[in-house]
Amino acid sequence: MNLHAWRRLKSRIAWSMAALAILFGLFWLTWILWTVCDLGFASMSLRLFTENTPAPGSAGGLRNAIVGSVLLVGLATFVGTPIGILAGIYLAEYGQHNWLGRTTLFVNDILLSAPSIVVGLFVYAAYVAPIGHFSGYAGVMALAMLVIPVVIRSTENMLRLVPNSLREAVFAIGAPKWKVITRVTLRAAIPG
Figure 1: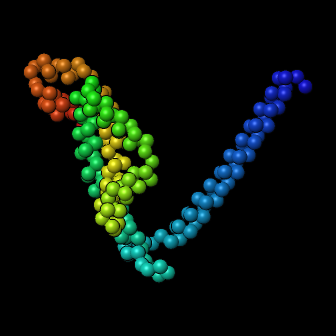
Figure 2 (figure 1 turned 60 degrees about the horizontal axis):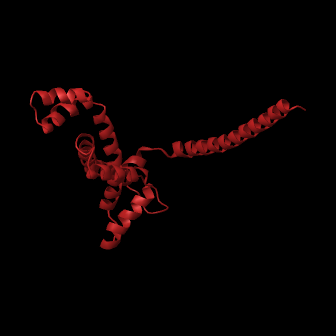
Figure 3 (figure 1 turned 180 degrees about the horizontal axis):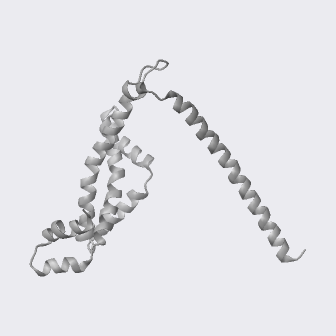
């Protein structure tokens, strides 16, 4: 057997093993999805969305869990979005060449890559443990800490897409920087 045929045989064996591994994984994923759908659709009813969670072993719904999740996410978005937008505006418009901007960008990159469990443990150690009991506000703080870096990066990238010639044109007619940012840059960056 020559070298070319030997490499082709090894390649076919490797492809076959990879295909078998994919099929093996897909079988179990399909089985799990089928089981969830089969048992889940049978349990769907209006009671699931309109009744509170009962004591274990009795019938009830998930209304309080759904409402609590919506409130938690809504409050975290309400807290985290303005902070992220303001920090993103600062990074894009003011903090490009100073130590505070570089530090903010560095900390934001760290927070973007931080796992959510680390953020949760931080909030637990900083807020829950000192007050001595669990709180919905702790969840809001943890989710807001996860929202802020994403909003900062999105805002900064969006504002950096606005051409400098547009800013320079508005500066040329004598507008102050805050007006350039609020009336021109943000409007150009946010379509509609």
